[in-house]
Amino acid sequence: MKFDAVLPPMHLKNVPAVAQAAEALGFDALWTTETQHDAFLPHPLIAEHTQKMQMGTAIAISFARSPGDIAYTAWDLAAQSDGRFILGLGTQVKAHITKRFGMDWPDSVVGKLREQIGAVRALWHTWQTGDKLDFRGDYYKLRLMTPFFNPGKIEHPDIPIYIAGVNTGLARLAGEVCDGFHAHPFNSPRYLREVLHPAIQEGAAKTGRSRKDVTISLTAFVATDAAEANQARMQLAFYASTPSYKRVMELYGWGETAAQLGIHAKNKNWAEMPMMITDEMLDEFVTYADSPAALPAALKERYGYLVDRITVYTPFVPGEKDDFWREMVKNV
Image (tube, rainbow, N blue to C red; front, side):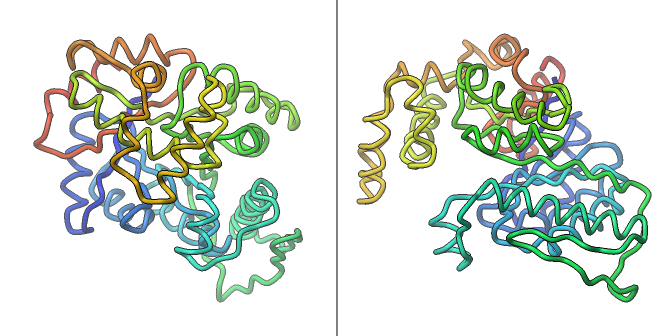
């Protein structure tokens, strides 16, 4: 199992120091998110200031971008990083795409993302081989690529694509056409085992692949004391209020709680929401350990046969908890 880190939201001027510290501690990869900042922009700096560590987006919001935009950016980052860049894409939810980015929400989320991935790879293929660009789908039609706009070959053209998801449709798509799957933090061993793994395997079988062809990456909630458990409780309440994530709660018979959390979120009753996440729910979604030193073993016991890469929900900040991170890197 690989152990990765998450870059905290920060200004670009601070990225080099964090990237260097992450590599020095031995993380396998450094992931960027797309919350307060663009997910791609830190990566030229990460690539410049590290030598071996992988890097990737977890995730970049795909439906806020065109296939061309994604393809050019990932191509340049793969070239600069000597093949260390992983393109991680996620769809986000409808309200964010339409109200925060001003883009249209597709009739088929899976269908549009499948086309986006195909269109991105079509561009990469044209740039690497010189073959004519001719991609035609329901959402995208790409037929123009002149030498003036062609960036040309790169040394590492096989850029891994991971997609993120909560439900089975995107998990099947990952199995079918992707190199990896970012399992959402709102997850549990049971949900991975009973819902996501079978969906990934089903998708993989469509294209003659297997589960082993898809790297599963998970960001896990962890807690070693009551304060960390309460922080997890607050974040889980937010995730559980999202209507499109309700299947996770329904697996346990907690659908009514999810519905009530959704009503509270709609009414902005944020203070009431964490109290609805019971200790039983925390036990399913959070990895507990008596001490930080015991956490690696707890994570391996809980997820060792279910995921290939793991990150903890706490962003990596150099100078904070360095002994904790060293133990995690060494023992996970």
